[in-house]
Image (tube, rainbow, N blue to C red; front, side):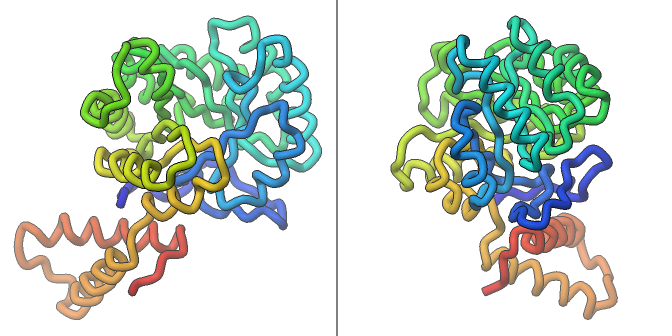
Length: 295
């Protein structure tokens, strides 16, 4: 179970007044982030009705370069017409980035952007300013340079969360998919997020349909301190949401500890009480946000 202590929505957190929107989990603590190709307009509404905490319409890697302008316009039209989503935009070094931010700027349904291939804090801040200085930017770190600059990126003005582009990182570095080999970049993002006072980072997607592998990889991510996960398929959402939530047993322990703490007049008995109190309070907040009940 992942515990993150920055759970209160910030002034820049996405919110919604759309009456049929199922997503009620603040983006700071959202677990599942569903990527949908920007060319697949027929899937936008279905994604919005899914179990994903957040949806991301992708106009970057999921779209052929020749189709990017059309996909961008399709996404912008949907967001302008009542749809709500994050958008993964092209990286700053491409010819598409400027057009992406220009067309998305000010759209009422834009929850925030995921900036592909982030490698410097200036890229985050430039994107944030170009979007009007209030749209959250998730920095998607996908290279060795991005990992080395992760702390500076996390401190950048406009940075909302960090995310891990695990596939591109492996391609850039030659690292295998082995759990031990991938622990270093994930841990770097966790530490950088903490230093930058950001929520826990979002892990890269698990490719494939085997739920046992998805569960295992999600559990590894949680054990390292990541608190969200990108995904490509709606069938993965229940597993991700379950693994990155407190368990009913966790919630029961938290309730019992807090009840006992109140019953003894909130008296601290020894050095272990404060850490346990903090953990119990975090579990309780997450359980309320995710709808997990004690068992």
